[in-house]
Image 1 (cartoon, rainbow, N blue to C red):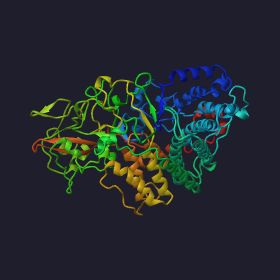
Image 2 (cartoon, rainbow, N blue to C red; image 1 turned 135 degrees about the horizontal axis):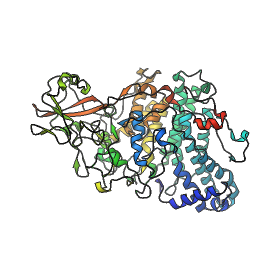
Image 3 (cartoon, one colour; image 1 turned 90 degrees about the vertical axis):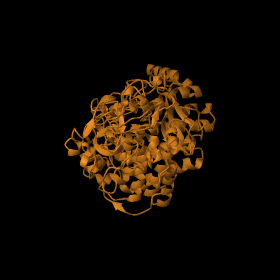
Image 4 (tube, rainbow, N blue to C red; image 1 turned 30 degrees about the horizontal axis):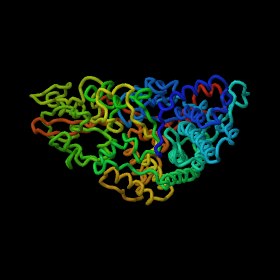
Length: 635
């Protein structure tokens, strides 16, 4: 089968016994023939490694304080329901919810214990080569190197250069010279990841059983990680950090001349997957492209999925639906913790909120806001009038007795605006009425309370499981799989790499595939050479379009933060950025509805420091090993 699912529950007993056994005696000694000499033993050994991979999914924490000491990656049901309070989307301004601190120090992701377990296998497995045929032996060695590359990728995108360790160190009897390993350069770190993945691609089989990677999963990680490396090499120069000690030592940043090397690796990896012919964009629910896009995240047999992380909703579950939909109408637990923001909604094909004179457009029904809206956005978010579990979303914020002027007169919802006087703009709690007309919808922006309503005028639809009744939508009971790699990402990775390599027409071919599936008005953007210096470096409009396409396609899939970081624009984009809300009002004297662009309810802004390009090497590790110095820039 081509669908690879990390089913934690499937081998839970194996994982627990495996971890327990390996802690009894030094790793690599206990029952090594049983572990490495049989396929069952290797399965038992690998499952603990798969469960530790740095996959940023439903239970991933973005903040250091709440993630410690679990480094952001929560084990199942360990307060994982709180993850979306501390989500990467809220931290980066991709969504709006809790005020998640953007801690420059990160959270100490330092998985060398896991890397040591991989190295035990890589170093000792040759002793059992005679127990396997050559293809099987090579595939298992390739799988181990895929796992090691995944752990290193989790560090490289955070810290740049880190120590490359391929032998098995003895933390008890090793000498300081052996244990106090120096950092490698960032170039060498990314190249090490490339070498491991190249070996995996060349040696792993094209298919694998559920829970295991294969050559195409390795190629997907190659596509993503090498694109990151290419960006870092090309754009770090614009951060103005050339005098920093870590930069001068090569630990943070690379020579721009290395960019094309990594971009070519990313491009080639995309071709491996494309030419393999095993995957295709999900179109099962055509011609309804909105439903089709929503369902690709729910259909575990999707032709688009390359690698997914599974949950069973019992031993290992998550609480995603409870944290993106309001209770009690749609869930049996929790409150809304993340909400979509208007500035990203408007990156899609989105209806005009104002006419040519700047007056708010009038709508006969609240749901008319979806007229002309891109199907992909409708598959990503729930809007007024949409139905979930038999209940209709009612997201109206309030009433204007009359509204005769420009949208700008509302001053982004300010109470000081004359048109927003308490006698003309009527706000209220859920169920309140004005002259018999509902003021605020059941899921609208209440004037009291901080959760459980449409903080920003819409709700997240992506990944919401429509098949479950409300009674089963509860804490740690959801079992949707998280898609780690899907073909759409590979297409957009390849498109960006191709464009940066000068293959502009081919790049837009890939973008067109995505936009046709999305149902966009314009399937193929114009190829032009207009240049902007918005970010402090020149970027062509067509390349910016490809970048924006990633934001549209991968909204709330935890790509956005890493895209901003590796493009080296996080401090530019998140520079006193105020999330905007889509607000609906009933104009009483006209019997029509208007939608306004307003400030977020807390009037809160996000600002990222330039140091966000790199995280701080964990201080606890430096205290143990001063060879990790110099520290990353600006810390």
